[in-house]
Amino acid sequence: MVDDSGTLTGEYQENPRHGVPQDDFGKLTDPDHWLGWLGDDLAAAVRQGIEDSLRSQAADAVVEWVKILEAPRFLTGGRRHSEDEQLMVVTRAALAAPCSPGRR
Image (cartoon, rainbow, N blue to C red; front, side, top):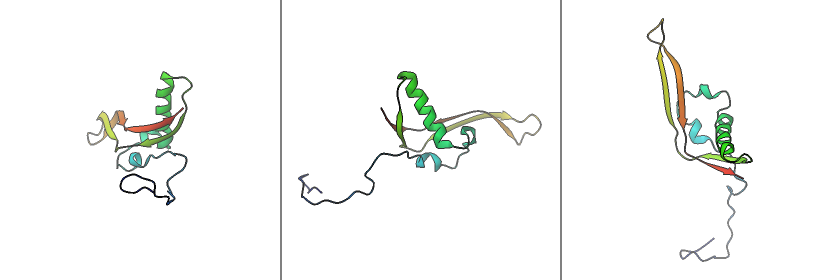
């Protein structure tokens, strides 16, 4: 613990969140948006995309953890179904999610 001036008081208070950083995809899975195009394991797909991007810059990069910092933004494009104008055929989809990867 520290006082108002930032000086250590000698008191100790355990931080239950202290420990090895772990993946946090909560902000990615909270929005009510169709993400089926990323597969059954959303977190793994996003993590793999980040890792692939980093490895294209440094072949030996290893992602140790990923935290999604803000709500993601989505872009979904498509065309009307040829037999039913009430349906849309998805032709492309994109996801932008500000994140912080722990890497080495």
